[in-house]
Amino acid sequence: MFRPLAEPGVPGALAGYGEVLLPQAYDGPPPWQSGGLPSQRTSSGETVGADDADLAALLRGGGLRSLLQPLVDLRSQNVVAHEALLRGPAGSALESPRALIDAAHESGDEAELDRVALRTHLRGAGRAAGTDLLFVNVDPATVHEDPDAVLELLRARPGGLRVVVELTEHALAQDPAAVLAAADRLRGAGHPIALDDVGAEPAALALLPVLRPEVVKLDVRTLGSIDDLSTVVVTHAVRAYAEQSGALVVAEGVESEEDRARALVLGATLGQGWLWGRPQALATPSWSGSTVIAAPAPRQRVRQSPFALLGPGAWIGGPESVVRAVVRGIELVAQESGTPPVLLSCVQDVRYLSAAAVRRFEALAERLPLVAVLGTGVPAEPAPDVRGAALPPGDPLAEEWAVVVLGVQDAVALLARERPAPPGAGEERWFDFAVTQDRTLVVEAARRLLDRLDTDLR
Image 1 (tube, rainbow, N blue to C red):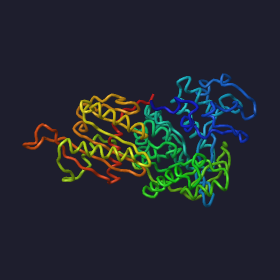
Image 2 (image 1 turned 90 degrees about the horizontal axis):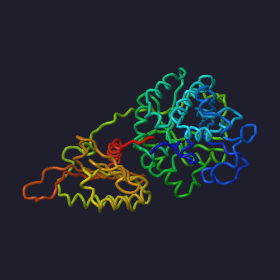
Image 3 (image 1 turned 180 degrees about the vertical axis):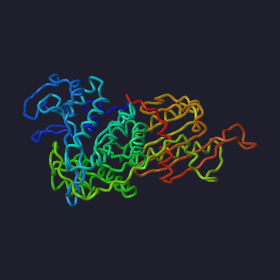
Image 4 (image 1 turned 60 degrees about the vertical axis):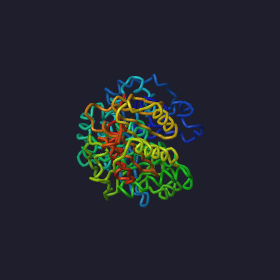
């Protein structure tokens, strides 16, 4: 189930409400490893418990606060935008974003907190002179639950305010179908998408070109040194995507000049962090120039099949045994990749999901960040850690056999469609099929499969 708020204490669950401010003197393990900060302190230094405040009263009475943190051009250090961060009443037990998230989870008010937070941010930006480009966090689950309510809030924003909607990498990895659907609705309303916290989730990194965010946010606090292999993999992938798409790259967590220099080396163009100030109610005046963010390109969700991407005559015919051998070769590529990709497979119907195939998918899921299997009658979890999706009646994909492997280093797909066997071919099934390594085509094939994954947001 996708809902970052459903697991309080996990970093991804905190991303939707802005950075968690650790006391500067605190040098213990991160709170998601230690079970929380040593104590919950208010801005006045008083230690309080979460029982001392009432989330329901805050949601009804408008006691939430929106603080703004500047985003700057890393070279000129001019302020070009702000991110809105949520806080509860100063001095209360619900002052911190973590306390708000935990309370909302306990009461089942995650979506309501999300909507009230968005309303609070937009009103706060309207009162804060000096900002015309605002980054706000919205949970894809909230968009899915009531898209009209979210879009109405965004339409009511102050005149002249441009809004970029941040979605988390954690969410994309956990429920890609939900995030892609939310991004489609938000882009359709004219709002660019930013993908937050990039680098921690291999699946999300692989799906970066599928989501195609207009802004990518890296956290320099979670990346290693510039010659660390994992850092190199992440930053090379993000840089390649940014150069191809024109996306902006933002470095978060910049707290020193050394961090700023490292962010530039890692390919970021904008920065955000304590080097330029803590979150505050008033906006730092923005540079009079305009920050260029690519205009969002709304994408229509289509029920066309991956095979339909192939041009006339781009395939050959062959028996099932040949196609099966090609499939296993592609699965081996995924299994042995230096940077594990995602693997998406359509098996037509559950009756073709043999015990041997289930074992292969289970083995792949132990290695890869995302393995999904689609087909008529396929259960929600056909093997441990393998996501399943049952195709609806009449879906053209039920006539196709597809395997798509997409990652930082890999892009390969087998696209096949069953056809009548030629005379004399015996009883073996026959397919028209093609293998492609055209990354653009592989990305779109992946998108068409991901669009069909079941979305279980709550």
